[in-house]
Length: 324
Image (cartoon, rainbow, N blue to C red; front, side, top):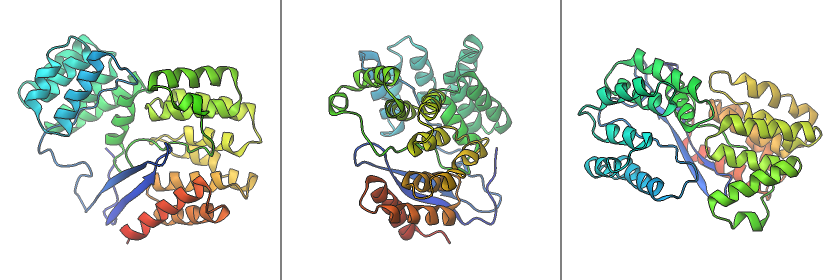
């Protein structure tokens, strides 16, 4: 796995303003010292991450509750009891992880043999291997998860472990506009369907909004396609061009995004969205000083706009945390 520079004292701890409403997402990246792994020591138990999308069926609700019991409430036995009531692959993986360390690795290896195309299984097998201090095998499993289903939560989370020097997850594009109220008030599944229909029949902005929704569901490949379509439909719209650049962000190859986003500073020299998202991506890779410069310029373009306020929120947190 990637290692951070021994010279780095603190990589990044920053509050990131979320795209949704006025929420705040806080992303922390661990302090690092020379020859110390970035990932937490293998004490405790491996995490669990189930990709249930916008499902609201009884099993999905039960599995979410069990995941919460295990990951947040540390009630593994109760979580395992819930998981064992169901026959799905998600439930099987949840039960195996919740039983840690009693047979977890063996059961996940069995599931991997039975479901060799499952990114869900490959990712969690990687976690079990890592917590068992079998690091090289863990890396292989996480790489398999990325390849098996790159358009999934499991690929996104696998990349977090494969590239621990970056902030967790992927940066989400922040548009300056929202879906119509008639869509925003819908339940999640219906809202997603409505955004998909609007993207199919509408223009660049509708495709951007659908792409953002897909990003929030950890569907980076699908989001990237929507953003690319938006940019082709509206090549002179800075938001469409920036969204397409942000959608290309890949921890294994950050230049895929920066090579598209950086030149837009010259194409749209007064565009707040260009500066804001350049700052966002720079934060994601730990270039804090450069990120601060971009965010200050973004704030200066329109301090009272949504992006201006979010840029200010980032800058406030950076000032409180410090980077030296």
